[in-house]
Length: 306
Image (cartoon, rainbow, N blue to C red; front, side):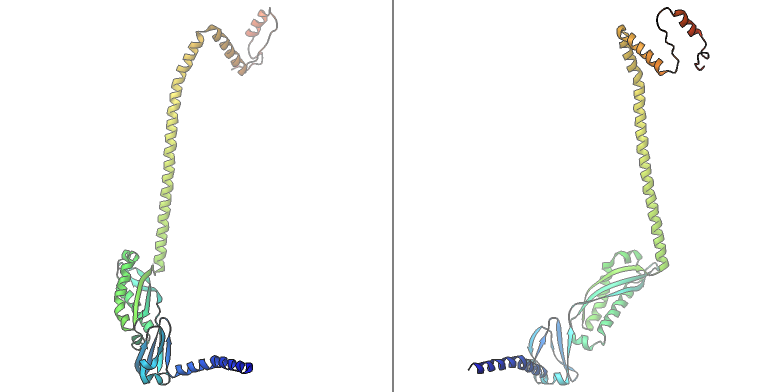
């Protein structure tokens, strides 16, 4: 009993492992069903005619939709699977001329997706290349002879102009045009680029020199103002000093006990700070010797003559 159950389980497993994929494969070859993935479209063609399209993702039985033709479409016809996801492309440096005659290059970026699979497959042999050529031609045709300032600044208007020009033709080829944006506008002439760079560099140098000179002038103004204010204050101090000193000397002269010692101290300080030679005599009674030394010429005592 256990042996029979084991054999039955193994047989069921092998049948499920091998038999089910084989059955589904044969059914798919016979056109019984089809599986459509996300953002894909199946277009069935038999004897040169489109007999059906599947645009929504899911599992489909083909016999109710295609009838007896579903049995032959895999053998005598063809199933075109188109990718309907959003795609994008960038066209670099499309040559245009400004109103002033400057040779310019425009880089344009655009989005597109397939909205009509039948038109995409049968109305144009190369719809993607034709769309790129149409965008390029429309860019050159619509954006030539614009003022240079507008070409460098107003990109939104230029993008909208190109989109309005390209959209009708792209719809005929099964493409739905999405966003179009002018991403880059540049000069194509190398000599013109070098000339503009030279002018910009010279202008930057002039601006830098002007800023530096303005800073030097500001510093000079500040320093001269500070020096003038300092000179004014020093002048005020020099004018006030004699009055202050005179007032202090008057107050000191009124008190003899303070005035005499102070003047003696000042006289001694001047003598010490001076370069005169001093001869000190000890004891009293040397008045005659002091008078003789005072009367002696200075060059004989080693004192330099002024």
